[in-house]
Image 1 (cartoon, rainbow, N blue to C red):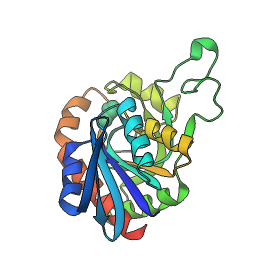
Image 2: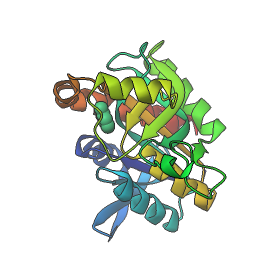
Image 3: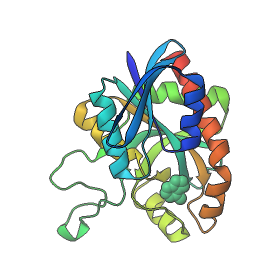
Image 4: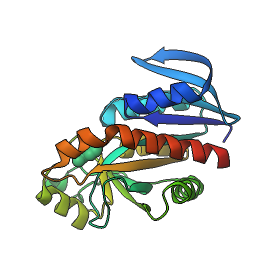
Length: 230
Ligand code: ADE
């Protein structure tokens, strides 16, 4: 991967990249600033996508247009898998849009009508590199699994049960599957790395606010460690 695209959802995380990347330039498009530079001898372009699937999709396409050969996404998510605790990490195996719902027409939940592939597979090599980086930094606290995305902050036990039991998600967030679809459309390898900020239940809003800074530091460390082994 000659040129690596990195997308963060949060300003805290992008600030850490600003601090550690040797910057060589930047450009702005669609209201998003893309910063180019070097990190551990690798050429990178990073940006803050903003929240939600549309922001993530536009941001990903513009990164690909800027010539990146792969896309890494870091941020926080709500845990769905009962064994996951706050602070644990999920590395995407696949990504699915849980709010894509044409079930009245006979399609499966998450299925994009008239499209064969709607669960997008992360690049196996990037998954291994991310997962190995997680295990070196946070032993026993990461898992590989399905990332569910939708333009909804999930904050109820009923919703968690549905997303976990019906769709098999390990965690839920608001960007990954949009990025994954754009990468699939372009044939660009990707991986999504998410630190659990909450359990997507009644306490999710409190935990989310509390955990953002810590999660940003964890995510940054993972990206940093990954880049040493890419
Ligand atoms: N990101 C972090 N926690 C989340 C949640 N509970 N729902 C959606 N996105 C999230």
